[in-house]
Image 1: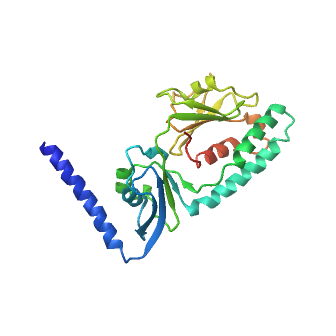
Image 2: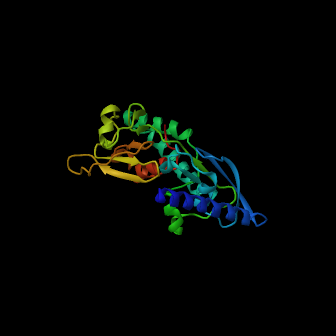
Image 3: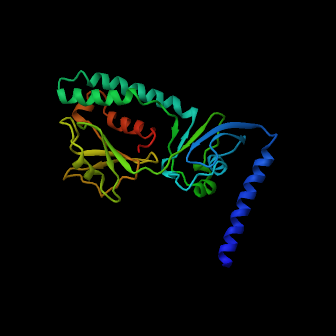
Length: 258
């Protein structure tokens, strides 16, 4: 009982400090940010200049259903590089659709259609843990006017896409290896047989060996993650030897799937 009382007192003190900070910022030079999704107070927030991502999350109060690994911190400063990355991918896919190999043409056309509907988001890739953000300032970015934060609910599926016959949305299975999901999603003749990419919901990208000669240690996919089946290196390297890595990097900027 004493422990529970102490915890309750500590929680009340914590939110009192947050409210005091918010009151002190009134009349100061403020900026506006948007926080939406699975939070108690969605919408526009006025925060003091110099506030950080953790301040916005504390003020918005994520709900019990919030999925912190999938949080998207969107910054206008990061968007420019993603616009250029997208343009480069669009160009490469146009070239790949002129390949002399029909499977490569088809796979490139599918990826080009997906890319057409995917915008540069400005997502800043990082793992979001409110307590960790508070004690490690280098992982806790300073907010700029117009930044936004999207807080999703926990998803129940993962996606398999890339050099596959058709994009697959599969039920997430805890601890199931990434390569095992390929059994439920037919790959294309243009697929790389040696590697695949895992894009975790926090934006971390992992390149895994899946052939007998380079097989990586078992790697699971978190809910909302994506398994990207790359084009064969012989096909992709004709336009850009980093095409597959670049495509996986762009995938990491997109919202998680449900």
